[in-house]
Length: 357
Image 1: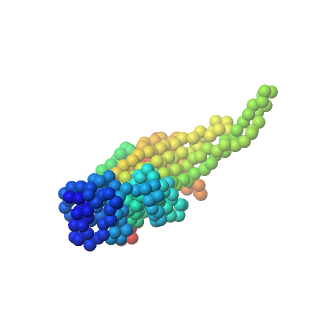
Image 2 (image 1 turned 90 degrees about the horizontal axis):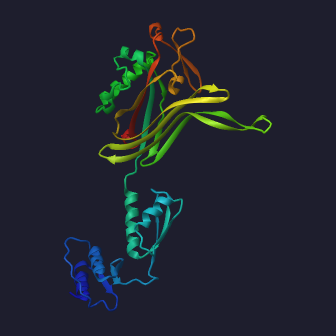
Image 3 (image 1 turned 45 degrees about the horizontal axis):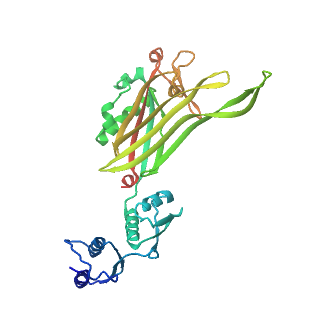
């Protein structure tokens, strides 16, 4: 039918007004639609005619745009930073459109009205979408391998691997009870328990360590060695975490963990040893996971920070921390065995909303 007849039918049925550009009244429109909002019907007709539809309340206008027909939209986007917001909105705008997002979330967009309507819808979805923050709790534990059997644990690095996929609170508490028993009996020590709170989709880091000075030296033509400055070697524990909600009670957790320590010196230069873990895994919320385990000898970085036999051979072990030297006594028969350790990394994540509930 002609566009004029089509517009009259829509106006009567939907209670709107339709204004068309001069010369379009006799343009033919052919549509088959069912249960569509009125603005989508008019937009479909406009596309068929090669023009655009703009709306102001109950008034629709169909026609071609001039260069000066752009409109201005001012909104607010609290969920994204300025770069991310401009990139996202840029996928919606036409080739004529421009946008600028300020650091406080204020957005100014200039484009055709149809594009601005999509921008408004996009921002509305962002503002109404659920925003979660997470608590990620790590436990990095060093077990004495030769003493683990006394607690009913496997001596290998895969201790309690079945519990790594614990599907119940009971399994979680059993794992935690075994760890607590090992620590209280002097068979294990908790190296560190970093806890990170972060927003969904974001990255956070925690670092606990030392800076060892390294002298920078130069040698003159005459063979004179002089110290010209100092560089620093970072050691300690560094944990970087990213978490993203995957729905259905699960999350994607990415962890970059390193533990390093100075184990000796060659002249003035430190020997640094360490272990590192880098992984991405899908895990269930509120469940305990064993995410990494490795066997190590007493010369490794984490062992250097934890278990050392006393010089008198009695089995005194020194736990070196930033604040104190703690002494743990082992049974003499255990002390005489070779010192093998198992380092394990455990993790559990919670939504803050779930914790409140």
